[in-house]
Image 1 (cartoon, rainbow, N blue to C red):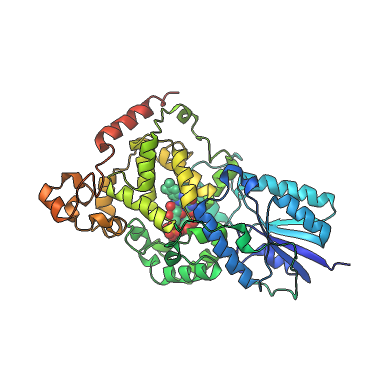
Image 2: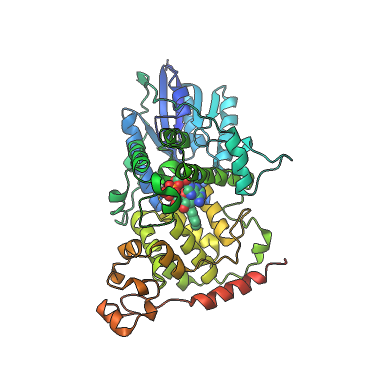
Length: 471
Ligand code: FAD
């Protein structure tokens, strides 16, 4: 007869420290740790290429931390768990909660399935400071605006001790039917991920060293420096947070070890934006694909495919936009300030539906996150609940001059402009011919002419917006 055991089902919590589901499961003598790649359940939101790269390496790191006892499967999670319950004497299945609509439905169905088999299901909060149902307005409705949400949510925050990595039971069960990590084929067949390796170390050790680096050299300049893409004033923890290589509580507790000043306050506020994105996704599950402001349903998008392609390739002729799009392709990441600029350019200057931009980000970002990506795109588009107004159109020239004045960031990703004097960096078309030729630039050949004019395209965007205002 099989020994009774507990299953711990990893999803977006690929760590051993501060992992409540793992800690709870490890109270049993025998534990079966599992990960299931369930693309079909995620439907159109199945993980994109860059996320799959991250997942591969994060699973590898987790497996090593679990003494190579992580059992990996590919398929429908309910079927895999059902099969495990047939073959092993499972007493309880533990998991940390996820908040994407398809994850919620799946968990509910699995709970029903387990209960019908007389098996306990135990889901726990392992990814948020406050779950979406912990904070409401006085009238019982969900907040739609960040600042009052933040004020209210901060009130219920309290320091919580970080759970140590549990002692792994002797009885870590290995299932002969589990597959090898490589069988998930998560790594791209082409080599577009080649440069990811020098930028990232997925897994909990990578997250912890990144956090330490940020706390000793970064956070001191966070409030002002976070908008300057050339500086190292940001944490770059977003992919680690998405995959749960680290918990937000670990980050908040680590902040207690440094001076509580406006930089750490601002950083905590950004962590709260992540929470707010999950909050919105939970209360407004159509966030990823429907305008939260319904008048945008009639927006006259032009969706020019040639322009979309130029944007994706970083060939719009606007250096800050192009640098951002190439950073994305080369590193799987883009600085937040630049994300706002490229998104505004796509939506407003090119009149391309924000969902097409969100979908490209979904494929290319190592931190692609249904909540943060959808909420942020709706924010820039102006159709979200707490959105930047549509008439706020980021000017990519001014943004470049203001936030990357010496062009260190822009020239890093656009080496073809590296000899161009700062004065013309964000407006190469204004440079005299001799300046261009000294910088080895031939517009239209070595670097594109702008695909649209800023002033005209801004006016076109405002006119398009005007048609939806009174609907
Ligand atoms: P830091 O400045 O160090 O902030 C710390 C953490 O706070 C981040 O890791 C992140 O978890 C959270 N955070 C910071 N800013 C935001 C924000 N505006 N919204 C939500 N959480 C935030 N973030 C994602 O994690 N996944 C996405 O798919 C994503 N898509 C985006 C799309 C657009 C168009 C825009 C404008 C923003 C998007 N963001 C997304 C938010 C933000 O750009 C990133 O979280 C941030 O750049 C990550 O870098 P960091 O870890 O150095 O951030």
